[in-house]
Image (cartoon, rainbow, N blue to C red; front, top):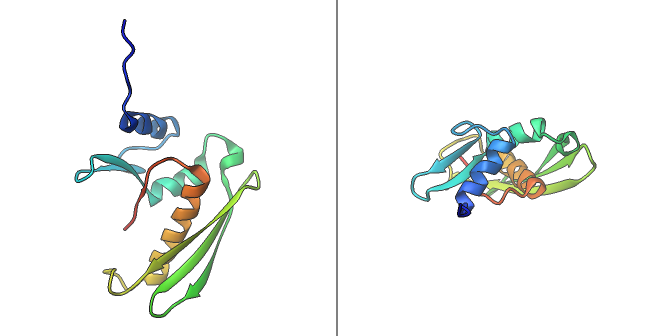
Length: 127
């Protein structure tokens, strides 16, 4: 019986499933790219429910760095095992259709820190 080659897309989907991530809740396939993207909600779910307890989040802190002309937030995420990462997120009135720029920048910063920690090999679908 020949070995079936698994595409990178299928490998990533299998990894998401093994981690307990649910399609269209924690990850999506964007039609224009036909690639799986983890959602911010998926990253946050993983941070709190990772199968390995030492890889669950212990602390998240955020700091407002700048408010004009662009909002910039820095977030730091620390896992239970002591490993940490930081991420920067930005948001501007010109590029966003929301007035909640601080929240948007903070979500982006936290997502970027989590991406560094979990290194899933996929971008985050940012709103």
